[in-house]
Amino acid sequence: MSLGVGGPAPGSFGTTGRGPRLLSGGGRRATAISTVSTLVVLGALVAVFLLAPGSAQVRHTFFNPTDMWQALRGDPKKGYYSVGAAIWLNIRMFLAAEVLILIVALAIALVRLSTGPVAFPFRVLSMIYVDFFRGVPLLLVILAIGFGVPALRLPFVSAQSAAVYGVAALVLSYSAYVSEVYRAGLNSVHQSQVAAARSLGLSQATALRHVILPQAVRNVIPPLLNDFISLQKDTALVGVLGAIEANEAAQIYSSTVFNYSSYAVAAVLFLLLTIPLARFTDRVIDRDRRRRLAGSAP
Amino acid sequence: MRRILSTVAAVAVSAGIVACGSSAPSGTGSPASGAGSCSSASVQKDLYKKGQLTVATDSPAYPPWFENNKPSNGKGFESAVAYAIAKQLGFKTSQVAWAYEPFDASYAPGPKKFDFDINEISYTPQRATAVTFSESYYDVSQSLVALKNTPIVSKHTPAELKTYVYGDQVGTTSLSFITSQIQPTAQPKVFQTLNDVKSALQTHQIAAFVTDTPTAQYISSSEIPGSIMVAQFPSTGEHYGLLFSLGNPLVTCVNKAITALKANGTLAALQKRYLQIYLSVPTIKP
Image (cartoon, rainbow over all chains, first blue to last red; front, side, top):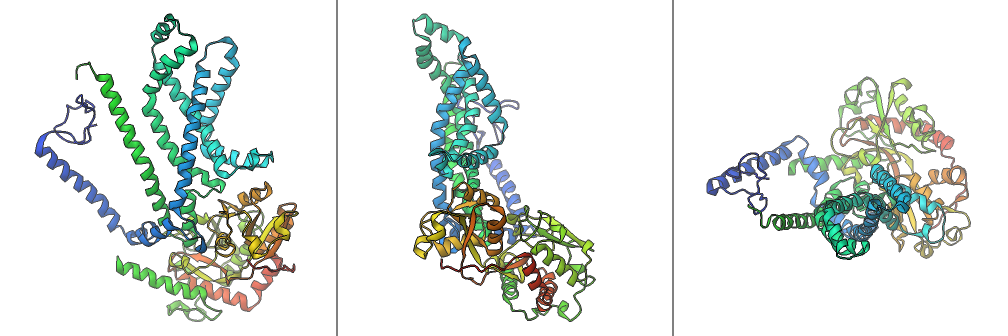
């Protein structure tokens, strides 16, 4: 979307055939105006923050460098753990969950789109599954798995760590969303592609594997990545099960010394995780747009 | 900014002195420190809402500090202490209003929606830089709770204590006690509420948890079947104080009320009535 003057005509989405750009063209005058506008807006926001009556107290409570540093380092002898070390648990939970979600969600989407009469009960089940886990708040799923499964006192299954139950809950919930993304992708591949593949003598399975899926997945990479950015942050919810991930470590620090600066540290760490993936998503979308527009008039 | 911060620090230091003080009157030179000036009329200007004393606590409010999760029934040690303080200040029972304040929110900067918070909050010098504490209304020691017939019940030398998986409620001094005194090799599990900690013990996710002795006695005797209070740890000088917004002048009169309640035996009687300190509890080293 165009953010400055001299860009595309009103009503357009700021595309010029080279993809959308943050800073629109329009020469030196437009650049100058953009700069001044940015300074005024940012300056006003900073001024409101700094001049508010409780500003000093808020800065001390939320952004105190000493507290932020202590929270990042951690000191179990003083009763709190390192937020910096705890983010590693978030990263591991995210990576494990992401791989599992990609597999489980694809299976659900394929079941839901199956056509055979034998698969009817499975189609119904997959529909109920998706409706249920998209409708129930993730936190409730985490609590139910994390406190419910150990209470069953099963061998092995009930003896896992909180992080494992957290990942299980994330997979259950996110697979419902991601299966819908897959389904949209599979539906976006034109029926003639299936017909063409089948007429070449490919079996149903081979057609799916080599013709339909590659096109479907490529179409939905941006929304998939979008869901994974969200997943990265939602690993913080697993803290309620007692796993010391970044958000939980921040909470321990803040309630031990009565200062919220640890949450700022956790926020910065999560940003460091999510921003690279967000930029990567932008690039994928951009590349996809160029590929699709190739050949058509700009 | 520097000036404001140093003011904050100065207030914090004086708050620390007040909270650490003995039972001597802790007037800090404010005009309200004169004898007889602490009445429900004279404290009106410092109240959150005129005409009533607004007392806050968390929900659920646990026994033996509160009973039936109903702070306004006057039962349970902290509820009774709050009403005793109110009476000492000249408030009628009907003039005490209760507010719900989650522990995590109680130390947020800015104005508070209560006069004081009574929620088993331990005084520490670092915390006293963010809020003002009253004098101690209860000196606390920590105890260990486990399930009967588990190893920790019989094996708890300082070295053996380090080998277990503990759990506790986030931000409690009990959790700090685990990490700083017991120093277990495995990270403890940290839960949002004490109820989560209890269910983790019952499902064998943790070997034991630490909590203050009255709570430990209550849980092991009436809440978790098959649980046992293994032992209590030597006191670290920890005490509970009422939590006020930083620099709230009302603390002066409330401290006087606490001092009076200590002197006339009310606090001791309430402890005896609600905290059941009648068991002889063995003490072990962390």
